[in-house]
Image (cartoon, rainbow, N blue to C red):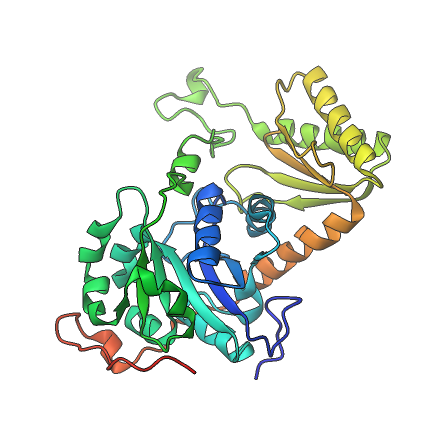
Amino acid sequence: MTSLHPMPGVPRDTTRRIGLLGGSFNPAHPGHRHISLEALKRLGLDEVWWLVSPQNPLKSGDGMEPLATRVARARQVAQHPRIRVDAPELALGTRYTLDTVRALRRVYPRARFVWLMGADILPQLVDWAGWRDLFAAIPIAAFARPGWGYAALASPAPRTFARFRLDAEQARNLASCEPPAWCFIPSRLDSHSATAIRAVRPRRPKAKGMTISDQNASTGGRVLPDRRKATDALLKLVRRSLEDDKAEDVVVIDLKGKSAFADYMVIASGRSNRQVVAIADHLAERLKADGQGYTPVEGKQGGDWVLVDAGDVVVHIFRPEPRAFYALEKMWALENEAAAKPVKKPRATKAAGKTAGTTKPPARRKKAS
């Protein structure tokens, strides 16, 4: 058995009923929380784990926030004692869902896992590596999503495993079923979408110091301003403000080439909630006085963790205890290690390579005692 512990605080011999909600969480939103709460109630689960993926194999890296940022924001959105947020694939060394599920079952052999998803994912399952083996590896619960209710059930994956479907009234038995077993949960719909949220985010131009394509700089053509100097000056202002307010343990993480929304992440600590809020307020005031305009500040109500979004520089200010809990610096170190490792596709059975029309799923097994 692997010596890694992908979910800190969870005993290896746990017998809990656990829902797994995986994805990029770019960003996490109330829709994720809605599905999790519905799963806790409708499936009779003890916990839901949000498995934040370092990089979804089916999605482009363009516009992908850094993993540490996505994990930290997901924890803010979750805000529930029975929802755990982490990125276990970094410790497990996996990338594909099937591999992650198999690895978690090896580490926690007595846990009863259920894979959670929105019904909008059902039509996409045939694009997942080893999707038939996934049905054979873990019970699956699909929750109704706007525009993707019963219509999603007509897609190839649900049709292939139609005879293994439980009625919604039997949903509380799903975690105790031997796979393949799955259930469609009609529930109150939540319209939040990470894609829609990203669509309205302001994007920074990628080009820096480039000549406008249809003009010649040597003949007087206009040149886009080089923002690198402005960004460095902005970072210097941020660091000076934090120093003036006695912020502690200031760490600067270079995001250039890793994030489409910022060039630097700055992490700092204040000794109390009051100092954390004061550091954030003074920083926002100094940014405004420097001509940076309105600067969004999030988290002042609690004062445990305040985020100051200065555009090219994003600043996280914590009290020491929440900073240790969110461990953004550690998350970045793990992410960099994962980026250097080669990616292996999951091993699939012979059936996984055949078409849906030529392969019969295995016979239904009885529930686990």
